[in-house]
Image (tube, rainbow, N blue to C red; front, side):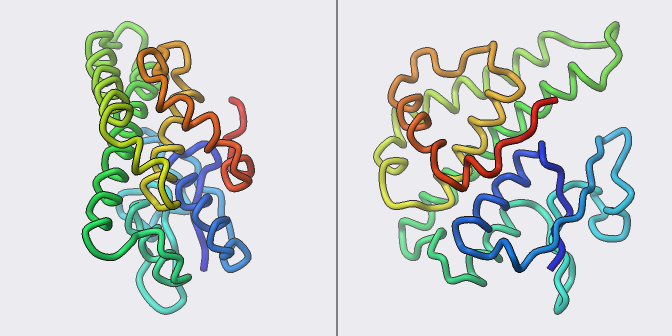
Length: 203
């Protein structure tokens, strides 16, 4: 298999963490495909019509894209159990969706500051995205701590990758304020070898 990736993409990081946790890293060739909405990565042309990473090219089927689709596929392939059966599955999927919502908002803030010309940047828009992140972190702190402290699943991985990206790009905004339980959980979880191995490079 071939994984089209960028080392700074938090969506790619979700996939990489799962590859580490399920012992599938050696089954995948990594192909750099860094780009932006204004300058899509050439290697993605013909692989993912949305020209977004991650994209997983398989020898026996069409290329998969969207981190949630790829993670579900890799988990099924390894029989890893990161998406549990029964009612617990819906909690895991909801938690992953919440984490991806944090990523979506954080990435929009990043693009607003990095891609939009300075005179056209909209501070209120960026703040509105941050308010989504604040609400999501508060919900995690108030509603989801028992799940985060439970058996390892894709929801936990997604949350850790989301919080890691917020630290990476928007640390100064301070998501930890008022979220002591979530901050304590993350401080422990980010020391997992799979998280350590997939930290984005500075820059």
